[in-house]
Length: 216
Image: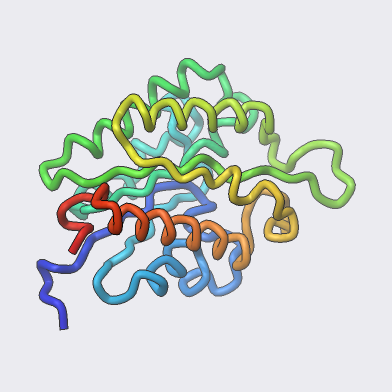
Protein backbone atom coordinates (compact mmCIF):
# COMPACT_ATOMS: atom_id res chain seq x y z
CA UNK A 1 0.00 0.00 0.00
CA UNK A 2 1.29 3.45 -0.87
CA UNK A 3 2.13 5.84 1.94
CA UNK A 4 0.02 8.93 2.61
CA UNK A 5 2.86 11.08 1.27
CA UNK A 6 2.93 9.22 -2.04
CA UNK A 7 -0.71 9.89 -2.88
CA UNK A 8 -1.02 12.56 -5.58
CA UNK A 9 -3.70 15.06 -4.58
CA UNK A 10 -5.67 16.19 -7.61
CA UNK A 11 -8.13 19.10 -7.45
CA UNK A 12 -10.87 19.35 -10.09
CA UNK A 13 -11.94 23.00 -10.15
CA UNK A 14 -15.05 23.98 -12.08
CA UNK A 15 -18.78 24.47 -12.33
CA UNK A 16 -21.75 22.09 -12.56
CA UNK A 17 -20.09 20.22 -15.43
CA UNK A 18 -17.25 19.27 -13.08
CA UNK A 19 -19.63 18.63 -10.19
CA UNK A 20 -21.59 16.21 -12.35
CA UNK A 21 -25.00 17.89 -12.15
CA UNK A 22 -27.59 15.78 -14.02
CA UNK A 23 -25.14 12.85 -14.28
CA UNK A 24 -26.85 9.65 -13.16
CA UNK A 25 -25.16 8.52 -9.92
CA UNK A 26 -22.78 11.46 -10.10
CA UNK A 27 -20.64 10.31 -7.17
CA UNK A 28 -19.61 7.41 -9.38
CA UNK A 29 -20.07 8.85 -12.86
CA UNK A 30 -19.01 12.52 -12.73
CA UNK A 31 -15.81 13.21 -14.61
CA UNK A 32 -13.70 13.51 -11.40
CA UNK A 33 -15.11 10.21 -10.12
CA UNK A 34 -14.36 8.46 -13.42
CA UNK A 35 -10.89 10.02 -13.44
CA UNK A 36 -10.29 8.64 -9.96
CA UNK A 37 -11.22 5.16 -11.18
CA UNK A 38 -8.81 5.49 -14.12
CA UNK A 39 -5.90 6.82 -12.05
CA UNK A 40 -6.26 4.35 -9.19
CA UNK A 41 -5.10 4.36 -5.59
CA UNK A 42 -1.97 6.41 -6.20
CA UNK A 43 -4.16 9.48 -6.68
CA UNK A 44 -6.82 11.21 -4.60
CA UNK A 45 -9.11 13.13 -6.93
CA UNK A 46 -11.28 15.76 -5.23
CA UNK A 47 -14.31 17.34 -6.88
CA UNK A 48 -14.48 21.11 -6.28
CA UNK A 49 -17.16 21.79 -8.89
CA UNK A 50 -20.05 24.09 -7.90
CA UNK A 51 -23.23 24.83 -9.82
CA UNK A 52 -23.51 28.03 -11.81
CA UNK A 53 -20.09 29.48 -11.00
CA UNK A 54 -17.82 31.43 -13.33
CA UNK A 55 -14.23 32.63 -13.59
CA UNK A 56 -15.11 36.32 -13.74
CA UNK A 57 -15.31 38.28 -10.51
CA UNK A 58 -18.22 40.35 -11.88
CA UNK A 59 -20.30 37.24 -12.69
CA UNK A 60 -23.40 36.50 -10.64
CA UNK A 61 -21.57 33.58 -9.00
CA UNK A 62 -17.79 34.07 -9.07
CA UNK A 63 -15.87 30.90 -8.32
CA UNK A 64 -13.45 32.75 -6.08
CA UNK A 65 -16.32 33.64 -3.74
CA UNK A 66 -17.26 29.97 -3.27
CA UNK A 67 -16.38 27.70 -0.39
CA UNK A 68 -15.15 25.20 -2.96
CA UNK A 69 -12.41 27.63 -4.03
CA UNK A 70 -11.16 27.94 -0.44
CA UNK A 71 -11.30 24.18 0.07
CA UNK A 72 -9.43 23.54 -3.19
CA UNK A 73 -6.59 25.80 -2.02
CA UNK A 74 -6.53 24.19 1.40
CA UNK A 75 -6.27 20.73 -0.14
CA UNK A 76 -2.64 21.50 -1.07
CA UNK A 77 -3.00 19.84 -4.47
CA UNK A 78 -0.17 18.46 -6.57
CA UNK A 79 -2.33 18.74 -9.70
CA UNK A 80 -5.04 21.31 -10.40
CA UNK A 81 -7.51 20.84 -13.28
CA UNK A 82 -9.44 24.05 -14.04
CA UNK A 83 -12.50 23.90 -16.28
CA UNK A 84 -14.48 27.14 -16.16
CA UNK A 85 -16.05 29.40 -18.75
CA UNK A 86 -19.46 27.98 -19.56
CA UNK A 87 -21.24 30.18 -17.01
CA UNK A 88 -19.13 33.18 -18.00
CA UNK A 89 -21.00 33.08 -21.31
CA UNK A 90 -24.44 33.13 -19.66
CA UNK A 91 -26.62 36.21 -20.03
CA UNK A 92 -25.25 39.35 -18.40
CA UNK A 93 -22.14 37.51 -17.20
CA UNK A 94 -20.54 37.91 -20.62
CA UNK A 95 -18.88 41.32 -20.84
CA UNK A 96 -16.29 40.57 -23.46
CA UNK A 97 -13.08 38.60 -23.63
CA UNK A 98 -10.81 41.05 -21.78
CA UNK A 99 -12.53 40.81 -18.36
CA UNK A 100 -12.64 37.03 -18.72
CA UNK A 101 -8.93 36.79 -19.56
CA UNK A 102 -7.90 39.08 -16.70
CA UNK A 103 -9.95 37.25 -14.07
CA UNK A 104 -9.08 33.79 -15.39
CA UNK A 105 -5.39 34.71 -15.28
CA UNK A 106 -5.71 35.87 -11.67
CA UNK A 107 -7.50 32.66 -10.70
CA UNK A 108 -4.85 30.46 -12.29
CA UNK A 109 -2.04 32.49 -10.73
CA UNK A 110 -3.55 31.91 -7.29
CA UNK A 111 -3.09 28.17 -7.71
CA UNK A 112 0.37 28.58 -9.22
CA UNK A 113 1.43 30.56 -6.14
CA UNK A 114 0.56 27.81 -3.65
CA UNK A 115 3.43 26.56 -1.50
CA UNK A 116 2.77 23.01 -2.69
CA UNK A 117 3.71 24.18 -6.23
CA UNK A 118 1.03 22.27 -8.13
CA UNK A 119 1.06 21.52 -11.82
CA UNK A 120 -1.91 23.45 -13.20
CA UNK A 121 -3.84 22.21 -16.22
CA UNK A 122 -6.28 24.44 -18.09
CA UNK A 123 -9.29 22.72 -19.65
CA UNK A 124 -11.29 24.56 -22.28
CA UNK A 125 -15.05 24.49 -21.60
CA UNK A 126 -16.98 21.73 -23.38
CA UNK A 127 -18.90 22.33 -26.57
CA UNK A 128 -22.51 23.51 -26.39
CA UNK A 129 -25.40 21.97 -28.34
CA UNK A 130 -28.97 22.88 -29.22
CA UNK A 131 -31.56 20.33 -28.17
CA UNK A 132 -35.22 19.57 -28.90
CA UNK A 133 -35.46 21.95 -31.86
CA UNK A 134 -34.45 24.93 -29.74
CA UNK A 135 -33.03 27.79 -31.76
CA UNK A 136 -30.62 28.71 -28.98
CA UNK A 137 -28.49 26.90 -26.43
CA UNK A 138 -30.34 26.52 -23.13
CA UNK A 139 -29.89 28.77 -20.07
CA UNK A 140 -28.84 31.71 -22.23
CA UNK A 141 -25.38 30.31 -22.91
CA UNK A 142 -23.46 32.19 -25.61
CA UNK A 143 -21.85 29.71 -27.99
CA UNK A 144 -19.64 32.25 -29.85
CA UNK A 145 -18.41 33.53 -26.49
CA UNK A 146 -17.43 30.01 -25.44
CA UNK A 147 -15.43 29.56 -28.62
CA UNK A 148 -13.71 32.90 -27.97
CA UNK A 149 -12.91 31.83 -24.41
CA UNK A 150 -11.38 28.60 -25.68
CA UNK A 151 -8.88 30.58 -27.73
CA UNK A 152 -8.11 32.75 -24.71
CA UNK A 153 -7.55 29.70 -22.47
CA UNK A 154 -5.15 28.25 -25.02
CA UNK A 155 -3.22 31.52 -25.02
CA UNK A 156 -3.14 31.71 -21.23
CA UNK A 157 -1.78 28.18 -21.01
CA UNK A 158 1.21 29.29 -23.08
CA UNK A 159 1.59 32.58 -21.21
CA UNK A 160 1.49 31.01 -17.74
CA UNK A 161 3.37 27.82 -18.54
CA UNK A 162 0.39 25.57 -17.84
CA UNK A 163 -0.64 22.42 -19.64
CA UNK A 164 -3.75 22.50 -21.85
CA UNK A 165 -6.49 19.94 -22.42
CA UNK A 166 -8.87 20.95 -25.20
CA UNK A 167 -12.17 19.60 -23.91
CA UNK A 168 -14.09 21.73 -26.39
CA UNK A 169 -12.45 19.83 -29.24
CA UNK A 170 -12.87 16.48 -27.49
CA UNK A 171 -16.63 16.99 -27.14
CA UNK A 172 -17.61 18.94 -30.26
CA UNK A 173 -18.62 15.89 -32.30
CA UNK A 174 -20.60 14.26 -29.48
CA UNK A 175 -24.01 15.90 -29.06
CA UNK A 176 -25.35 12.53 -27.92
CA UNK A 177 -23.24 12.86 -24.77
CA UNK A 178 -25.04 16.12 -23.89
CA UNK A 179 -28.57 15.09 -24.80
CA UNK A 180 -30.17 16.15 -21.50
CA UNK A 181 -29.91 19.89 -22.17
CA UNK A 182 -27.01 20.45 -24.57
CA UNK A 183 -24.88 21.95 -21.80
CA UNK A 184 -24.39 19.30 -19.12
CA UNK A 185 -22.78 16.00 -20.08
CA UNK A 186 -24.28 12.74 -19.01
CA UNK A 187 -22.15 9.83 -17.81
CA UNK A 188 -20.87 9.23 -21.36
CA UNK A 189 -19.90 12.88 -21.73
CA UNK A 190 -18.19 12.81 -18.36
CA UNK A 191 -16.28 9.76 -19.57
CA UNK A 192 -15.07 11.69 -22.62
CA UNK A 193 -13.67 14.37 -20.31
CA UNK A 194 -12.16 11.88 -17.85
CA UNK A 195 -10.52 9.89 -20.65
CA UNK A 196 -8.99 13.04 -22.16
CA UNK A 197 -7.60 14.17 -18.80
CA UNK A 198 -6.28 10.69 -18.02
CA UNK A 199 -4.52 10.50 -21.39
CA UNK A 200 -2.97 13.95 -20.89
CA UNK A 201 -1.73 13.18 -17.40
CA UNK A 202 -0.27 9.90 -18.59
CA UNK A 203 1.49 11.59 -21.48
CA UNK A 204 2.92 14.21 -19.13
CA UNK A 205 4.21 11.55 -16.75
CA UNK A 206 5.87 9.66 -19.60
CA UNK A 207 7.57 12.75 -20.99
CA UNK A 208 8.55 14.17 -17.64
CA UNK A 209 6.47 17.35 -17.97
CA UNK A 210 4.32 16.62 -14.94
CA UNK A 211 5.29 17.89 -11.51
CA UNK A 212 7.81 15.95 -9.45
CA UNK A 213 5.03 14.67 -7.22
CA UNK A 214 2.91 13.63 -10.20
CA UNK A 215 5.75 11.64 -11.71
CA UNK A 216 5.78 9.19 -8.81
